[in-house]
Amino acid sequence: MRLFPSPIFRHVARGMTGPAQRSFVTSTRRFQVQDANMSDLLAAAHRLEGAKKAHPTAEHMPLSEVDANTSSPGTTDLMNGARITMRDRHLWLSVPDMDMKELKLSYVYLRDLCKCPRCVDPNSKQRTFRSSDIPLNIQPQHVRWDNEYLEIEWNKDTEGTEGTHFSRWHYTYLVNPSINTHDSTLKSMPPLLWNLARMEKAQHWIDYEDYMTDRNQFIIAMRSLQRTGLIFVKGIPDSREMVEKIATRMGPLRNTFYGMTWDVRKVPQAKNVAYTNQFLGFHMDLMYMNEPPGYQLLHCLENSCQGGESLFADAFYAANQMKAQRREQYDFLTKVHLAYEYVHKDQIYYNTRPVFELDERTGELGHVNYSPPFQAAIPEPKRLDDIESKLDDLDSELFNPDSELLNPDPKLNYIDFVHLQQSLQIFTNHLESPGNVFELKLNPGECVIFDNRRIVHARRQFNTATGSRWLAGAYVDTDAVRSRFHICTKQEPQIWRHFNPDAYLVPFDLDNPRSSDRAIKAAYRMGHEMTNRGAGKYVKYEPEQIAGKRGKSRNTRRKIARKD
Image (cartoon, rainbow, N blue to C red):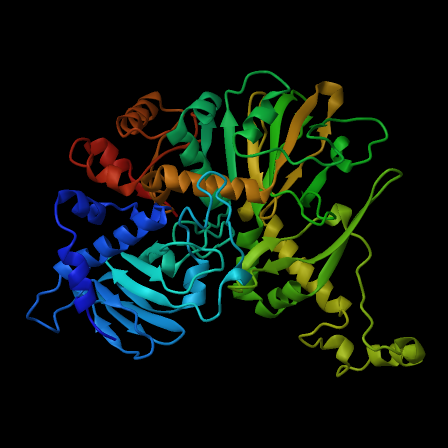
């Protein structure tokens, strides 16, 4: 590998003088030039900039640009401690000052990452080439590093490519080139597991007008929905169409055989237990579909009857408790599948899935699948191809404590029903523990939004003889809502990252107007909303907000209590 400037390059550089030529050097859009002649001029100017940064008498002084001579591979020191090592099919990039791990990047891979206007249409954002078009022997002609961006001028490019072709990437893109909206390991997106005590303090209520028109308040609401899986909207106009407006603020409606939106009210000869006045236990919706809806909305239009309270529990919290206390049973529910079905005259749906569905990449909990009202016959895969010929041995095997039927192997080619029953019972006990269940009765003009792949919901029995109960519902797919989450992080990254599960709370007594008034005024001075429909037990604000107020109000300071 040789360092700039070369004799040929110095000859080109001497012919490029004057401010007009140097203006190309400062342009960050030079790689977008399509004309071949202009691209050649651009390439020469680009090299001139690299040569100007090299001291003519200090041969080993760090440079920002190198010739890519892969026939003589070696390492070149660049600016600020960066190093590039060239090989015949890849390069190594090391940038110590940015705490970036050393990256091994093949030339084919780098060429495939190109996002220049020649490779990705600026309007449609779609690629104009195929991965299979890239020559396996593609090589860089020149490589440049400017302390943030890696730029390559290609020597052998895809067939049909004319003129000089530059590819340019920021180092953060090279480290993480994909925006994976399903990545649960992102530091800015960790779920906040909750029980009753935490949800009573952390519940998020947002006014309908703020939800629809105030971008920052909407982002705060989405942040809470992503963290806890459960938020509430209040002050909604009395209209059946409002649930669609609230839902489409997050993303497109999910259509099912129930319709784009649907009603939850008592009907005769109901095809779903939700359309009765009976008690409805904890469950998740549409587990029998190949892709269950990700988020559910229930907008209360009427709820004047006795009963009908809504119950919610964090299945992730219950699963986490089970994992810590009964790891064997937890692992069992990650492997064994349950079946769910919906069988009626005009619709037949069926699917199987594990109770705890893990992320294949991280091994962490990705979804919980739990819906006893729609559970079908437990699938029992055949343990042996000729199991039918061994049925006579089955009864005696059940009484053998060393039998494989009572000691399932990791592949789970069969199901131990005793183990399954015990594991499900443990999980159910955690879900239904009074300390884990958040209960409230929705009032007209209020809407709950929750994660259907994490939060289980239930409903108490109600008596329509003393009133009526009517909720309007809708679904939005996981992809749409997670897309909205990531848009919110880009629009207001500071607001999104500001969420703190260890927020401080100002408790106040509703029966003591003076105490309530002081707490409300303190919260309003800090610019933070109240919880519990605007008249609950706590006013919440963040620790940094407290820090600026502690010297101003001794009474308020005494009321501060750290969240459990």
